[in-house]
Every structure is written in C-alpha cells, then in structure tokens.
Image (cartoon, rainbow, N blue to C red; front, side, top):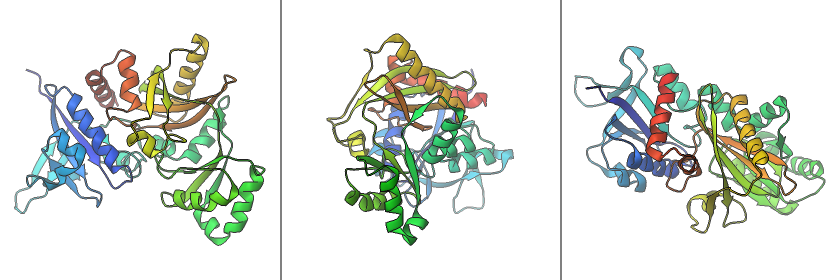
Length: 358
C-alpha cells in the first residue's frame, strides 16, 4: 500500500487577512481527500506563534482552535536533512515531524508576499504556489504594473505612486501632485501597494477625501497607488499550472458595496459572483489568453487569480494578480475550477501535484 503524502497546511498569520486565511484553511480541510494525505495543520497566531493543532475544521474557521489545550508549539526545521517540523516541548528529546509538501493557506503580508515562500525554500520543502521572487513581485501592485507594462500589449489603469516618507515630509506637495497628475478628475482609487482582499482601499470622489484615504492605505503599507477609476464589469480568471498553465472559465463580481472591498467580499451577503456566459467566444479567449500571459510575465507557478475590468467598449483592463487567492466557500478561485470541470477535492490534489513537480 502506498504511503500517504505528508501534507502540512499553514493558516492564520501575522496579517490583516488572518481571519480569511482561517476560513480558507477550514474549507480546504472540509473538501480534501483525507485518504490520500497524512495531514498536519499548523496555525500561526496574530502574534506570530506557531501551533500544531488537531482542532476540527469548524474550530479553525471560527478561531476557537487557539483555545485547544492539545495544541503544541512547533517550529519549521531549516535543516534540510530533516525537512519538516520540530515540536518544542519541555523535554530533552527532540521530536521531529517529517513533511513532504506544504500548502501555505496564508493571505496578505507574511503569507503571499514571498516571506513564507523564502522560508520554505530555505527549508527545502516543496510548497503550493509561486516562489519567493514571483510571490513578492505579484504582491506589490506597483512592481506588477511595471512588469506588465514592460511586456506590452496589456491595458492597465493609469496610476501614480506615493511613498509615506515623502508624503509625511510634504503632504501638500504630494496631494498637489496627485490632483495635477489626474487633472483634478475623480473618482480615484487609493490602494496600498502590498495588501490583499481589498484591505486598505478607498474610493475618493474629490480632493478633500484624499488625505483620509491615504492615511488608511498607509496603515497597510508605506507605498500607495493612486489610480484612475475604471468603469466596467469586474471579471476574474483562475489560472492553474506550472510550465503549461491553463485558464478557467470567466467569473464576474456583482459587488453590494460601491466597490468590491473587504466588506463586500466576506461580510456582505448581497455581493454575488457568477460564471460569465454572455461573452463573444473571441473576447472570452482574449481574456483567458491575457490572464495566462500575465501569469507567465510574473513567473507564477501552481495557481493565481487574475482580475480585470471589461469596459462597455470591449477593452480589457488588467487590475491585479493574486498568487494565493481565497479558498473559502464563496471564493471565486475554487468556484471557477468547479465550473470548468475540476471539483474542489480534485483541485486540491492537482495543486499538491504541481507543488511536488517543482
């Protein structure tokens, strides 16, 4: 009988998206084929403590796993001779748990920005998703814009980059620069360069709203993008693969709020998503091809979700790429692959296979 693959699922993290990560991990644990894997779940608290937990999926999702008295403090071994976890117990004997592959179900800072990926690469552990460099570049919206622009042929929203240090020294000058750049035209979006799940994003309708929006964004990152607002349908494509990535069918977001912010994504039941069925086949293929092209430009592996705006004119405008998209019950990534013929459990299997290929 073939040995089960030893799978480590990481969740939580020191991130503003800690709660989303928990729910994603809970969903994965609910859908995974348990007969194929020997599963170890490690939760990272908001304070950065690592605990091996045997709590059920529902307790991981609601956060009560942290109160489980059976939790054990662990650390990732950086010794490649013993790849896996070290259990930190008050005994002289060192207990090690070997791991074959890691699924870092971590969103936002310290999870999908290359830091965790770098740690796993140093430890010599295969993991689901892109490597350190690709993860870091894709997380940074400013760097992504530059890389996609250099490749050419892909439309993006016009934007200006604002640094916290410069803004603190001369807020009036920076604000004047923004209004001048956009010719005092509104609305604009103010976004942290490094944040996911639309955390820290504001829509501003006039110059008076800019300072508060910048303050909100700077709370998440010291680098902020101020971007023109694009009017159009919000669409997303799930991409899967390593050397030969594939695109899923296309999904569309119908936000309950003024835009698809954190609240609209995870807290407002009125927000809806759907598979797009009304596009011309050529336009649909153009969007899929563009998603795969961006995936390759950014050097992604395993998975990513690529987001666009589709204007009434038919122009496709790239918005952003997410290398560790949500896996909650309402998340678009697993839904799109389900609609494309890959059920959630099979999708998890495929992602782990892709990780082991690397």
